[in-house]
Image 1: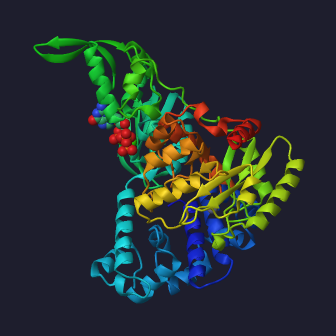
Image 2: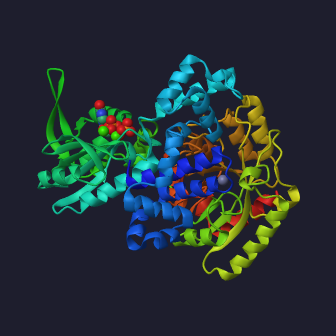
Amino acid sequence: MTKYQELAKIFFEFSYWHEMNNVAFKPRAYQIASEAVTGLGDEVEAAWRKGGVKELKKLPGLGQKTAEKADEFFRTGHVKEYEQMKKKFPVDIWGLSRIEGLGPKHIKELYQHLKVKNLDGLKRALASGKIKSLPRWGEKSQERLSRQLQMMVEASDRQLLGYVLPVADKIVTELSKIPGVSRCTYAGSIRRKQETIGDIDLLATSKDPRKVMDAFVSLPQVETVHEKGKTRSSVRLKIGIDADLRVVPDNVYGATLQYFTGDKKHNVMLREYALSKGYTLNEYGLFTLIRKKGKHESGKLIVCKTEEEIYEKLKMETPPPELRVGGEEIAAAQKHKLPNLIPYGSIKGDFQVQTDWSDGALSILDMAKEAKKRGLDYMVVTDHTKSLAFINGLDEKRLARQGKEIDKLNKTLKGFTILKGTECDVHKDGSLDLSDEALAKLDWVGISIHSHFKLPRAEQTKRLVKAISHKYVDCVFHPTCRIIGKREPIDLDMDEVIAAAKKYNVALEINSFPERSDLRDVLVRAAIRAGVKITINSDAHAPEHFDFLPLGIAIARRGWATKADVLNTKSVKELLAWKAKKRKK
Ligand code: DGT
Ligand code: CA
Ligand code: CA
Ligand code: ZN
């Protein structure tokens, strides 16, 4: 764990601890602080170095109390109150909380009755079958817990792209600074922007590979060194994932990059195709093919400096890495029919943003400022609705008040627009949480399922389709409700959902939050094929969440989406025109 992760963990455990003990307000404050620290990363310590508590307090998400704790942590390496708490309650709250459905009260109960302190203890308790006889538990919840635990274990040897990518970016930046390094990038699943990453594959060119190896193994992100060679090294990073670096001569970089970008299936298909054209392809380049006594051999080297040259020689377009899955991209590239994918950086507005009116960390104005700072032209405020009372969801009255506040703010803002929206809760029967009258006044109506995740497929599908058919609905937020490694997607007939979205002209969201990544790539592709519009939103609850937007674009790209498929590439004016046209129908 890095220092900031440790601090985030401390705040998180405080949040659960206070909730177990029914303390008011503190759980929320510590949760916000924990998320803020996770998002800000090393910036927290940098702020502390600059000016202690005073600077820390300026960070979004930290208040007086949490800033003081952070200060104590950076000064002494400990937080006294935290250590006292740990003495009273020696439980790995952080580890246990990663299991979906295991809240503070459950963790407390498991410790009090069965002395469960950590995941191993939980496994033992499950094996003993004693959990079902605890008060408030039962056979069914014991079974569910067992499944959730399994899901977490399966997910734990891979990490979410959203948390690996910033680290990989940093490493590439560092390595690129080394004198003599002319090209450096990541390859493998990261370059393809896969949902989860097994390990980081790095590639560089240099005349002095030894120097690069020395620098790589001594990067601050490195925890241990598995292997250090002359041109290849392998390390374990502090974030708990391995990274390999290969240094190759400049003239084979393209071929090596192509090979190590993969995926395996794409490479195999491409190699077969090359063979059929009289070439061989390997990590050193594209060669003429010599057949000797029924065996293949590489002849003369043709190209290898860039990836594009290789594909060009094979008379194909170069598929963007996100498309290289060993499927239809090869045939499409041969026919020169690859889609013109939505470019990174082409999102003008974010259609799902929460503020402190419900469970967001900042005021509407502060979120707007943060969105603008990141290059957005507009955002839609979509706070939760009244069914979610525990996070202060809005009823019609508060929504109207919020609308007035937004009108006021828009008059003061230059070059940025705030639109009025909602993340309206969908009830069990498919009805919506706000009146038609209230919904009619909004610029943007998103709907979300936040309850009854376990309904059978037919019922769940009917529920969502009914909500989609509602005349004021514009978009379904995080349609399948999955949380990677924690919660399975809800059981939906996605063909029916997509057909309904098409029929009622309702967009489907790509939620950029790393754990959600919902819709996932194949469903995006199916939606687009059906002619359904996509939105890419951050679901920001704190300013640093806006930085997740490129992850959403990556999913869209993996789903073959072009700019025209994605509503967020429209200007405010264009979006409102789209919406007006839709209402008339
Ligand atoms: P990961 O690390 O599990 O998230 O997925 P990748 O795709 O990064 O896989 P990895 O790290 O095992 O290998 C990196 C790249 O190297 C992979 O995308 C394609 C290439 N590669 C690895 N093994 C083979 C192989 O046996 N044949 C071919 N053609 N390519 C391979
Ligand atoms: Ca890899
Ligand atoms: Ca690898
Ligand atoms: Zn929320």
